[in-house]
Length: 477
Ligand code: ARG
Image (tube, rainbow, N blue to C red; front, side):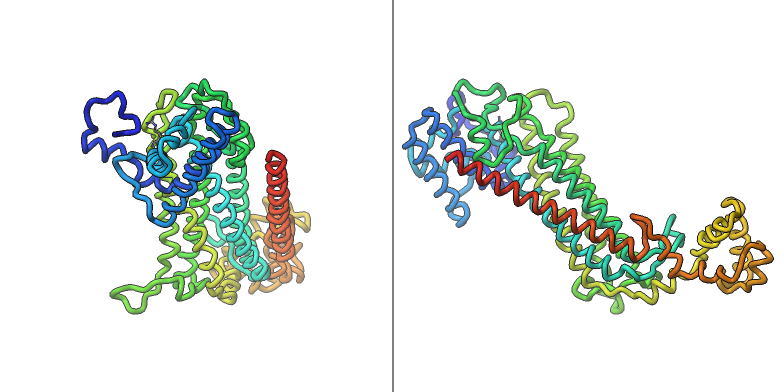
């Protein structure tokens, strides 16, 4: 009989059985489900809602169910609907009638909300760790290439020269924000819905705060209707994951472009590229393409859950069961992509000479020429026009600005002197851009240091925080 079968006279139709069962995917929550049940049972025992001996039996039983699931020795059944009822059934089979007391003062509605929060808290931490590792990789690359001259683009047209290190630091900045976003979301997520019951709390004098603290939460959710039906925390994770994927996809796109023969800025390591089944010469950037392609899945996961939530009346509705697959898919996808991107970048070969050669082409020092004139008190708009005319002249002659003679320069503007050649040099132009956030080698190195400090001080704060929580929970015992 079903755990809820009391008021039913007929069996569930076989199609319905399969249709509404979620065990095929929510089995992934077994650890969180059992942790939540242990905290709940222990609290029931402390309050005296069940006896301490019964609580101890339930806790021991749950631990052995967990061990069996981990060893692949527990049969999780479709007919038993979901992970919550499967665990309860296994428990009762193991310890007998006392197992039936576990669900006192609880509903699957607050139970599943709790499980998903516990799951996402852990995965948020893992994702943040993967981000930190990718950022460290980018910082190393930025340091290595702090003086690697490279073309900078707007509209994918050569614009102004930069350093490759500066380009890498742009991505480090994006991923640092992503870590921050996940950290913010984690703070809002970290409240326990346990004790919300089905929708209206419970008549049992549960100690919600106590169970919450045992599970490492900062507190309890403030409203029982909201507690069972809120999935903002999942949407926030999915939004942050979608933004991470967007950043990864932009980086992947550049890797794809740079590794093409037309750009030739990098060569991917053989271990991170793939071949063609027909064209023997091919070496394709499939990994980067897949990262770019998988971005679509994660956007889909976000939109799927937003759409599930839209229009749901309070409080729990079975639609909410559809939250899990989107969350699982996004977690797996974003983590795999973060993991693979780091070695892909670290193992690629950077062609410095080619980058520097390209950085010298395309009149990218035309702004420097205009700036040179403006520094000699020519109004910038006029300086821009003079530089533009000289670009036109060079275009006709088929040479670069620095190839013009001093006489040609002076014909365009009498204020130009021999020092113009220094102002037009690639290296001087980039080195002079040393404002905070700029591409000059010194500015890149400063940005690397600042990013390392940010990661370090956060890691220290997290350790202190962890130590405090551990000390607090010792006080409680
Ligand atoms: N498997 C369900 C879910 O994932 C658990 C909650 C079921 N609650 C209910 N009232 N049917 O949402």
